[in-house]
Amino acid sequence: MSGLGDLVSNIIGDADAVFLFSPSAANHETFVHGTDVPIVVVAEENNVDAEAFVELPIEFTNITERIRFGLEGGVDHGHIDSGTIVLCAMNLFDDSVDSLMRVRAGEFTHTGIYDLFVNSRAESSVIRNVLEVVIGLGKKGQKGKPVGALFVVGDAGKVMNKSRSLSYNPFEKSHVHVGDPIVDVMLKEFSRLDGAFVISDAGKIVSAYRYLEPSAEGVDIPKGLGTRHMAAGAITRDTNAIAIVLSESDGLVRAFSGGELIFELDPEAY
Ligand SMILES: Nc1ncnc2c1ncn2[C@@H]1O[C@H](COP(=O)(O)OP(=O)(O)OP(=O)(O)O)[C@@H](O)[C@H]1O
Ligand SMILES: [Mn+2]
Image 1 (spheres, helix red, strand yellow):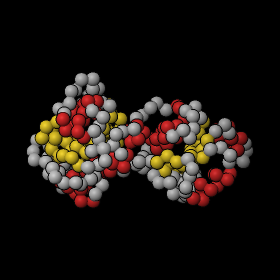
Image 2: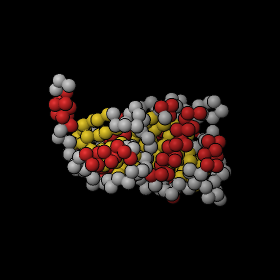
Image 3: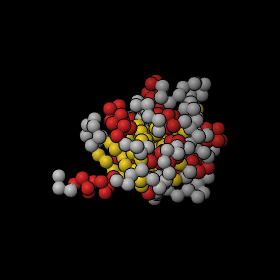
């Protein structure tokens, strides 16, 4: 094997921690027993009873985003320091680890995806549920036609104060939460009409058809996005909410926090 082992050990030799992405129990065992550096598991669920664990709120089909999220979580939970050289191990093609990547944990610029889920007022499961609804809407559209939607999540009292009603609120006296199966259907139906949905920290649907009237001062969103995206960005600067928007015109899903665009994704890729 003509020196390949040496080349590879140059890449992985100085790693001080291993991040295992969605490992099988057998893979996890192998790594735990095969090395004495700390092992951190990054996955949607902790199926392997890992001591050090970072929960992935969504699957992240983009691998660099998945890694970034895992590393930010690892630092945030105190599993590693930000300068640590990490070996990321993944199975991209089947059930056994087939991919190793060497990354310095602090190397990434802060993307905000981690904060969006973990440091928001709203529960991360609520944000995940809203994202799932929006991605679903983006995939199918409404009766085959592209549809736009705006969800404002968290800090609902303040959001209600900075908005006005465009129509009667179908959620007025109801106690429905995002993630309830019936709600998916309702949200998709009501998203045909104008305005925003307002969701509480705990996932209660507070209102549909809200016209947002935040101050737009200091909001810096990419040129070319229209009033829906501007309102979404601005409300997240004026309150502690985050906003998730489906664009009717380009079909992309965008998330805003603190007045900034945090990420954009193509629902067709999910
Ligand atoms: N302040 C607001 N609050 C709530 N909804 C709004 C607000 N401003 C615009 N919208 C909604 O966004 C819709 C689309 O407006 P516009 O085309 O200007 O936005 P956009 O950012 O270009 O979004 P899209 O990419 O979906 O076209 C409006 O019909 C309205 O339903
Ligand atoms: Mn538009």
